[in-house]
Amino acid sequence: MKKVRVVAAVIRHEDKIFATQRGYGEMKGGWEFPGGKIEEGETPQQALKREIEEELDSEIQVGDLIDTIEYDYPSFHLSMDCFWCEVLKGDLVLKEHEAAKWLDKNSLDSVAWLPADITLIDKVKKGL
Ligand SMILES: Nc1nc2c([nH]c(=O)n2[C@H]2C[C@H](O)[C@@H](COP(=O)(O)OP(=O)(O)OP(=O)(O)O)O2)c(=O)[nH]1
Ligand SMILES: [Mg+2]
Image 1 (tube, protein in one colour):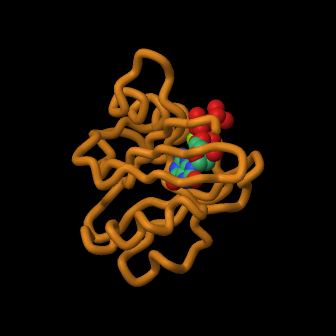
Image 2 (cartoon, helix red, strand yellow):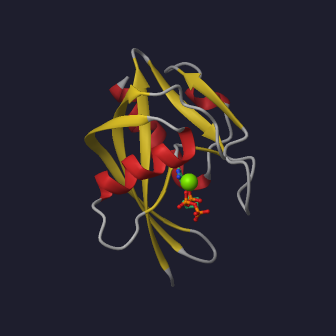
């Protein structure tokens, strides 16, 4: 099966994290952590900084790895590095996403996360 390497930013501010709703494609409408595919020659951290510039017009600091999610979708295998991040500059402008929400421990389960993200959510909860 095709393997897709992705990086995702769990952007944190105080006791909340930033969740985004996909605005296009097959998984449109599903909630995710912003990020995307690692390009050739990039480290995961470089890829994540680039993706957040592109998707949210903001600069982030990439912190510790939370987890690497391995998940089999019907047509590809996803390998996704998820990092704690903080905003350094910018207003998290939605350039590609449909909507966004700041969620705390209690509201984290209130959005329809993409299937691969379910196992990550418990770890994020514990870290908040
Ligand atoms: N960014 C992100 N992608 C996720 C998450 N969970 C999950 O299953 N995915 C899947 C959806 C996509 O198939 C893939 C990431 O692709 P993407 O669409 O964000 O990639 P990209 O930003 O580089 O966009 P594109 O240029 O390929 O359109 O991983 C998540 O939490 N964040
Ligand atoms: Mg993306």
